[in-house]
Image (cartoon, rainbow, N blue to C red):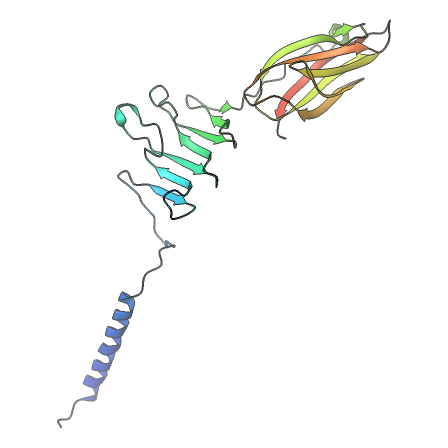
Length: 240
């Protein structure tokens, strides 16, 4: 048998190892759940969707892309690109889109409660909030002699106003003086405690979301011949 140079045998063995390694790597599926040192780019109408099951009927928890999932389409059938985040039950929790692209071109960010009410939204036509509506407390007289008052021992409405309910609870502050007690009513139903002197409390508003309600600040004198006076200082919608 002819002598074969040792270095040639070594090269053949090395080549065999490389072929085996190449075949092994070809049969190995690369990891699909990590991106290192790069970007994921989706273009030309592509979408990113996350579902809670492989079944097509599974709830879509996250969607980034275009219509029809981001609805409605823009005038002329042009797709609308946006973002939807849903809860496990499929209800929308957060969205970036316009609900009326024919009259409101700019998109807004909206956060929804479990009953699909918009509880927070930025203003698509300018800056700041669209919801919730946050009133500024109205300045009231500092001089007690200018406060509304009553000498009646029956509950008497001294102040009234209207509001749109945005929160499940309200925080109330009423400054009071004299001899008697004050209270707050919402649509003729007492809310929170009544009390003598300055009154401050937080209580359920007892009205549905977006409901238009009437507030009444009432007072009554402690006894015949006495007088009670008061001045509303603040009414805020707050969390439960």
